[in-house]
Image (tube, rainbow, N blue to C red):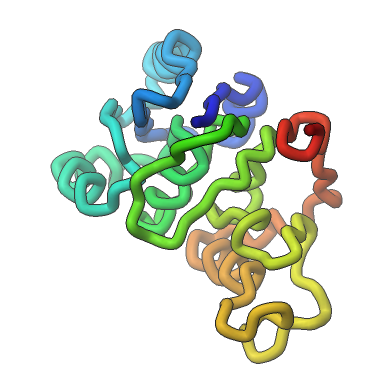
Length: 206
């Protein structure tokens, strides 16, 4: 199980470009989703004439289901400068992978509870760390895509794109670099050092 919480509204608004498509996942029945807060945020975007469209669904972590539903709204997505995903980290990563050339942002943090998480057949995982970093890593989780869970960039041990801890694993930060380059956001890597707030990570505080 897990709890999905909306990030600070001002933080979300500061990230978003002018035109936005919003994807809301009500997810698995085991997940707590901030439905009222999400609807309020969407209402503000609509009132400001910044919304190209919305999709409310479930199980966006299932890529086949996601593809069918997004393709029906492709003109709205193409019109948008970015897609805002309101879901857990697994759903966000699935959307980012499918919309590879589109800027994708998450509006949620995911907090861990023991049990079921997502239904994706892909190799995505969410660290459920309570302070999601996906907005500064192009939708690729640095906690789970990197063997060392580094959030400030590549270590010195990666060679030829492979992880020094697991040579069968692609370096997560090289994947992040390529994704940010593809969507024209490499400048985000010049941001101040990201500090991980372990107080928001239930797993770490147990």
